[in-house]
Length: 102
View 1: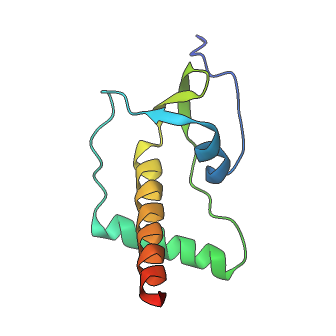
View 2: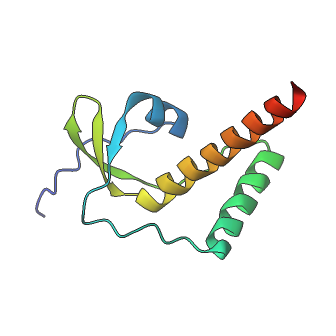
């Protein structure tokens, strides 16, 4: 079997991944295409895992190291993008709540 260059398996959290790296979305990736049903499934799954006091499994992701702290996304771009969008929405809601309290 030909070696395709996958030589490191790393298990960790999205939190750690976002703190440690910047990302490049290469041209081979399709545009973000989640539908409202995809979002609903994602949010329902997060709600379920939190109600069961367990962590959410985001699936396997594959990256190519491009620099010291830069990764090119090979697999997982849709999931990473939706996670970032969700975090931005939560951030914006928290900013709005803080402004209402002042």
